[in-house]
Length: 153
Image 1 (cartoon, rainbow, N blue to C red):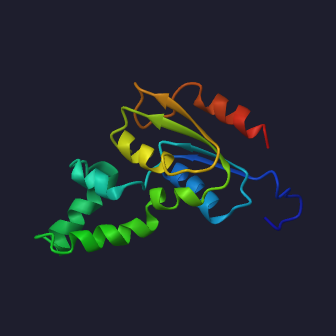
Image 2: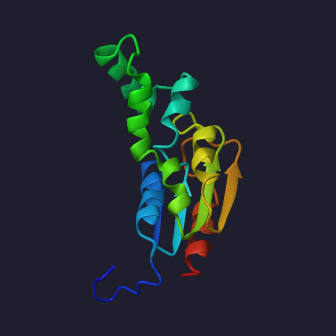
């Protein structure tokens, strides 16, 4: 923020998937970020992914971990508690920025319930665009909405 040429009142963050999670996390940690756009953020609600038996693709390391290091799941609660420290949903309430959120309901990498876990905990001014027929991909028109939203900075 303290760089030459940066207007601290006009800083935004945006991204999709892991970038969407990092945009939310950055805004939670830096209250001077004024606007955030997050499309189907990753790293939300690990426990829900596990409970839905969706620990595949990007979450396959969860299964790998338990198979290699805790095959009887004796430490399952402890592991998910520790993952909670980096789970974006637990930081969302700290966001002060205005938020534009994109949710894709056919997403198997970032399941909709995990996306909403973060969105529902945001207390700041927020809006959501929902795309029922889109998976882990940029839906048409969302980046236009992003541009228009960020033009408000």
